[in-house]
Length: 255
Image: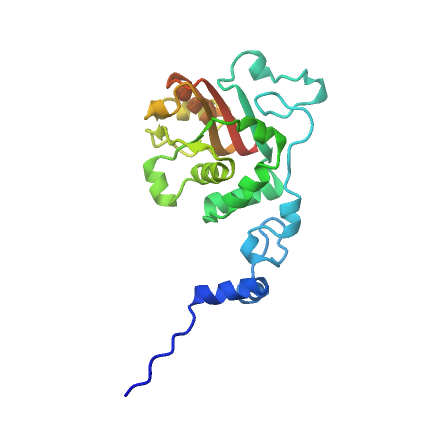
């Protein structure tokens, strides 16, 4: 008679046990050594990556006065940027964590180009630690991620704006509404001038399921605000679809 097979704990169980007793991080650091993409320091806590502890603690954040649209200003700017003074901003308010530089730039590249989806989880936590971000996310607002074209979504496997919106929603209780669609497979915006970016996204977006935002505050969510061509095009579509007010929230903003 054959002896009953001995069931060994699976890998997931083993990792759970090691995590409980504090052994997981040291083991991962030895078995899967990796370095911080921002400063190249070895990661002592790989499961909390991709940045090292120092770079997480020193993410660049906006300091000083800012326009209501979220653009950082010099003290002498009078509190309003030129675009807002001329009535050219199609959204009511904006905010971002910090400038698109240093470790924040590295972090967003890890999310967008290397598929490190867990970045969105910790990034949402850090963003919600900022007063200016929390002011954007008022009760009853709806989070609307900037969409990718279906072809690009299939190639990448995810939409980084959608991941960030979902993590923000999980922590605030706000709803996510995928009401925007990208109907034109536009060229990449990288390297284009402001005018070229605006022309590139002209007519690229449309709204569906308008009832989800009609009469409500719509908070447009994206990873980076560069020239604003994309978010402004999206904001105009949301306003035309009946949103009572449009706000913009991004992880980073190019100065």
